[in-house]
Amino acid sequence: MRHERLSLDDLELVRAIGAHGSLTGAAKALALDHSSAFRRLAAVEARVGAALFRRSRRGYTPTDAGELTIASAQRVLAETERLQRELAGRDARTEGRIRITLPDTLAPVAARMCAAFRAEQPGLRCDLVVANAFLTLQQQDADVALRASVLPPEGLSSRKVAAISIAAYEAAGRGSGRGGGRGKTTLDETALAQGDWVALDESLAHLSSAQWLSDRVPAERIAMRVNTLPAALAACEAGLGRALLPCYLADASPGVRRISAPLPQVRADLWFATHPDLRRSAKVKLLREFALKWLPGEVELG
Image (cartoon, rainbow, N blue to C red):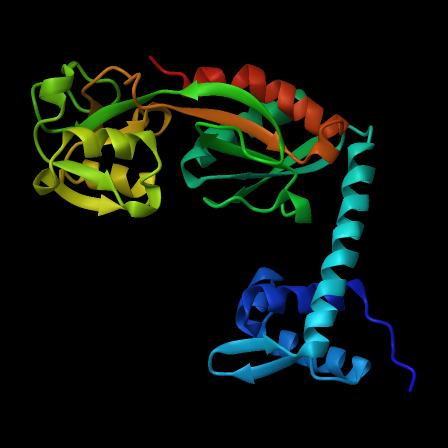
């Protein structure tokens, strides 16, 4: 019996189902509707003449044939993606699109940067892909990543852009200072640790701001825990408590005021990262050099 060849789209579907353990997760990752993914999997299994997954309430489990197909799909797609990156890395054109992945807090800053970059390089367009977890640059979900962390992202070609200023804030109507921006009050560390606080939950316990609060503020004074910095800003604006926030995010809010100078113990660096195969791309190089000049003035705030 002669089996029909599988396409790269077929292999992507099989790889995605294997990675997510469900047809729903794979369909979402590939931007397909569930019924289309179901029909495509049925067509793939008909072409290979074997069931690739066992269906159950717990999800999709690969059969022996499925395990073999997933492993082959990973190898073939990894090589195809490597070739695409290498070709993109040799691209000397200074026109087209650049996909930038970044966390939600940086979206307003990045949008302003892209507007300024487009004015300087009208042949280039930037697309923003907001994701707090790293999209995989290996699979070309994005060309460039902007990330805040103490250490550079592993396995990527990274340049430190700036040190991010982080300070303490409270709701604008509280205390003796005015609301909004930097305010008038600067508290010392002892006074700063008083009062109620908005803290980060265990998913963000690695951040230096979470460690600062853990060391100085007892649990009974934590009014709320949140899992994102925009949520911390919203809780602070609502008057639930003080919060440690990046200055580039909180200084733009009229609902809070800064009550400390940037704290040297609470730090993160902003990194411009790309896959090593893309670091010589003319488009990426132009954006990198622009970002290195433009971003420090936005995130290093005194």
